[in-house]
Length: 295
Image (tube, rainbow, N blue to C red):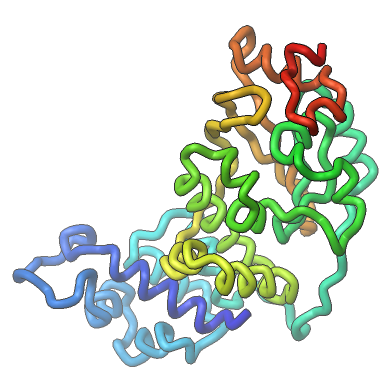
């Protein structure tokens, strides 16, 4: 993935979202192009216009910490956006060239953990948003139309982002699909900056850009968000509409593995529905029969 070009794109997109008033500058009327001018960002960041222009043109790599801090202040970046800018700048990039991607494997301990959380739907994701493992309830909640053992074969693993944009059954799960899709793209942007040398991650972005105009449009906006918790609404084929909270637990290493968990308020209708989902025989759940009849 071309990180200098991605950094330039990110800077341009963030500059375009700001007004002079946002950063304490005088506004002298309507502008032909929305956002701050390059000259204004350069002034706020304490650098020459020529140097800043080269950053936006993708002609500089390995920007110093001081440059990153100045840009973050000038563009009013959030902590997540600043971290993304660090990744794109190459400040902490490995010195090796693009590495050959290898299929990830879920750690046995992580697999035992999610299996033990039977009443909590859980999915283990790799750094490319591929499914490395899931427990029975997690599988039945997000992908009952797929084989439970699909994650065991690296070449045919489900990928949560690909499914969200290209799999009709997955799209149908989300009544607020555009919100869910925007969140997924923003998260993938962060991963693409962190794992810039991963060829399979770059290939996933390329595939989705070609196959999904919606993804291409969202990706071009360069959103970034660290989606660690929140709420999701699902229109499940057996449970009906359920309101769930989600938490993303990140492994404390450099693997990029995360455990996505879904929870419901104790005593709620959704909690009761998840209990039925856990007890339902898998074959019945796949056939789409009523879960009330299956227990």
